[in-house]
Amino acid sequence: MERWRRSAGVRVQAAAVAAVSVAMAVAVGSLAFVLFLQRSQLHEVDASLTQQAQTLAAVVRQAGSEDIELPAQLGTTSTQQVVGADGTVLASSTDLRGHRALAADPGPGRSTRVRAHLGPDADYRVLALGAKDARGNPVTIVVAQSLEPAEASRHEAFVLLAIGGPLLVVMVGLVTWWVAGRALQPVEAMRRQVDGIDAASLASRVPLPPARDEVHLLGGTLNRMLDRLESAVRAQRQFVSDASHELRSPLAVLRTNVEVAAAHPEKTDWPATAAVLLEETQRVERLVADLLLLANADERGLPMRRVDVDLDDLLGAEAERIRATTGLAVVARISPVRVQGDHDRLARVLRNLVDNAARHARGTVTMSVRSTGKAAVVEIADDGEGIAEPDRERVFERFVRLDDSRSRQQGGTGLGLAIVRQLVEAHGGSVAFVEASVVRLTLPQ
Ligand SMILES: Nc1ncnc2c1ncn2[C@@H]1O[C@H](COP(=O)(O)OP(=O)(O)O)[C@@H](O)[C@H]1O
Ligand SMILES: [Mg+2]
Image (tube, rainbow, N blue to C red; front, side, top):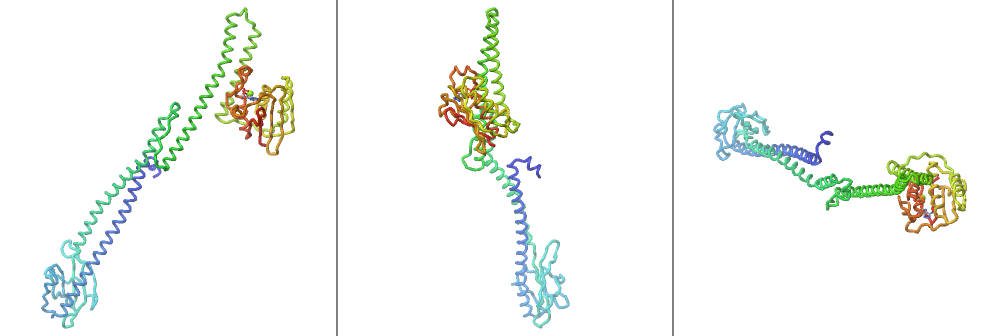
């Protein structure tokens, strides 16, 4: 049954279920009808026999038993006998002339009903009634009626049901099959449409049936899924194209330098060329590492090695680094704060934010870390121009840089904040610019 359900289509299943249900109903109904017909026919025959017997009994009561001629008004089709107390047939209708008694004496005033065979296949219902003749002698009135007409009409009904029933079943099956097919048409249209969709034609959508039913809902769900797929694919393409674009410029610098040096080896300042090549190579290396990190995060999320991390230590180290490598003043307000997280990745987050601040600062970088009890809050600020309100969210997108070409030359790829957000969210935290040049990082504790 399960195997059949899996292999047969919905249409066939619906048609089969409908047909079987109707077949069962028709079978039960037909049987009940035939039984009811049989009972009511017998009832009718018995009523008619009782009447005949009573009429005949009345005639016998008035006549002398010896010379009874059955009166013509009882009808030529009637099959009747008058039987004496000793079992001899005293009188009978023409069709029973010479026949022995059809039924035994039921006793005075009582009656019995039996079935009898008269002739090869004529089934009769026989009624015997105990009565008395004019002289008070007990006689048995026997009347019989053929069951043949009743059986014939029952047979007719049976034949009609036997032909009509299966016909009805087949019709119901076919109609159900057709209706189910019509109901499934929109599904088939959707299937065909989705079948034709590939990465190149993600813009198309499935047709929605006008009726607001389950199929309509399914279509809506499919279309929303296609929306998501399309924007994911578009983002992916954008990412690849941006990444290629970013890789091109350092590679071009490398190539030009190598070409010039190779063409004029004697005029080349080799240490200077080596320095340029090294710098550009490092740039490519950083970029590729960043791209790889983001690609991995997209693909399967970032695996975290969670340990206790002292944010105050990490931020203190950053403050020292900026003091040592730049001429900027650093104001650090640091209290001990510990979170659970991946040590190297949290260090990376702070480094990216502090680097941005240092790059945009005029003279001072301010950093602080504190705990609210539930969360650790790190704020890094600088005294530079900051970011205008409309760009504060956008800078967290990949490859978004607001800097002019001069600072672009300094090595920013526009991936720094995108990586920060990815890593912070992987820790269950959040990061945003709360003011033009104040970025706030919140990590749960
Ligand atoms: N503290 C800051 N002050 C002003 N602008 C900033 C600051 N931090 C980030 N930005 C802007 O956000 C952009 C994106 O930053 P980021 O993702 O780190 O990329 P990158 O540092 O490689 O340029 C930067 O190009 C810069 O324009
Ligand atoms: Mg940066």
